[in-house]
Length: 566
Ligand code: ARG
Image 1: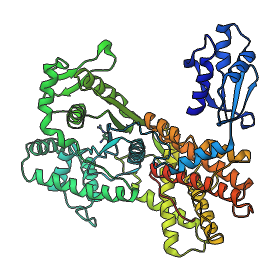
Image 2: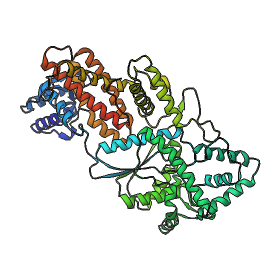
Image 3: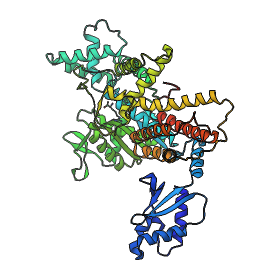
Image 4: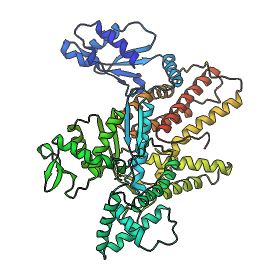
């Protein structure tokens, strides 16, 4: 596109009164008309008092001689349709396959981003509601890495708060929950539930919990050690899930990490006149009451969620000088982020702060998630179920059991991730097994299959033509469907770029689905192994290989593995 633009700019320069800034080049809406089109003649016609079709013709005449374009034509009310020579298009695709970044602009070079995601609360089983933050956050991380950014992935776990007072009371004074190992998260969860159940009829328990919390905040023993133990138990469990999902963090700075910085934070905000006393508390107010007031420190000296987040921003900016900080949480926290972003900006802690919000995840059967009532589906169980169902599909496939298990693992996890990532993060989503594991529609198995299919074709080709090498093979698209696939693959880099900038992995998911569908159509019409002309066979196989490279990289960015056969 860039090369064609250059030719058109040169052409416009030869015509008085034209402005190259008005030049827009887009992919053609219908391949039959060309590969690209521009309405630049229509843009100028009025100003230059010319007939748009005639002006289009004039621009075409002025295009310098070149070996890129095959044909240029006027169409409709004055559009210019351009078609690229097939060997030029093919050469671009060969080059794409040879580029280590597969055409992804390295726009993040030399810049840092901090991504705050997953961030579950300690002493509770990680469940479905944490899944979206973990999966979307990881895809955003991988998008930024692919675009050349240096990424700091931070798991801002909720490891401080009133729940520990309750846990300490239950741990120290309640009978031990039976049949549950003490160093498991279920044990802590049971304690917490027992506390809430009993507190309804024994209000004095709340008072005790507050006292235990104060003692913990003073780092008194045994509370401080017990608290550490609860965290270790939780992290051990979280790590199991992360490992399964292929998720890695660079830092796990939970809320407690910032405890010692909270008083100085309040002092700094006071000094900058960003908070003031109101009814005994320290409160931030907003211009024109754009947001409700935000309490930064309570009358009794206690700090809040927003206080920690402000200390966290200050720390991250001082420590990492990031270009961007991205937070991934559900949309119910929208106001919280708007409030503390506004305070942080006024405090002079500048960087591009983005809250990537997502909607709720529901189950098709209508199961609603809730941490309190115990109607929780642990994440672990969902992943087990996904693998089990994927394995069932393979029941009659004649592969060794180990391989079937590995396929089921990749497809099952891929299905859970893709079901989420293929939808706009902001929407509420309904998790449906039949949709997630469908082999036909926009689903993980469909994409896995498209990739494995090319690998299969390649392996067969090696077998059938062991002497053949693709190294010097050129791609020359002949059929319309081949052109279409070439043009589509060439968009890979710009799609990844856009998905990174907007923090929308679903743009990449859409592209992958489009690529897999085009590949299926291509393979239908353009056989590879049966083709007798070796030049055509090589061209098609090489095109299929570049397709598979983009698929592998695209799936990798979405956190999905690939399979050599399925
Ligand atoms: N622990 C919080 C929760 O589960 C999410 C934290 C998100 N990150 C942040 N910096 N506030 O709701």
